[in-house]
Image 1 (tube, rainbow, N blue to C red):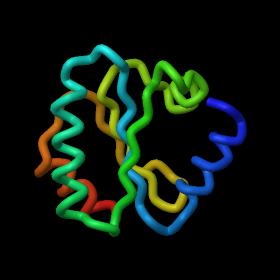
Image 2: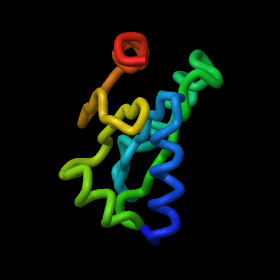
Image 3: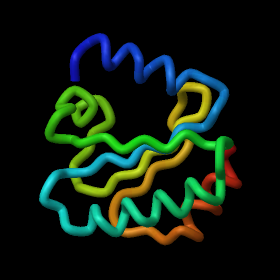
Length: 103
């Protein structure tokens, strides 16, 4: 990730709006299911949550910063702080429950 991109990401993360980032690896077949899941979550949450998808292979710096060791890692930020993290498979219900708890 270029320094400018990282600065822009920090600006997004520091806003009052909760930000859910899905970190993924290219070639991970479960990613296709995650795309559908995140789209469904976005339809339900609307503009109350910002959802971003970040390809790990193009963002080594973020992988190191957030210690990403497995595909399909979700991290929820609120006001710049990590308030929830999950690696591996997850349901829409679980994501919505965590959003309700932390946001």
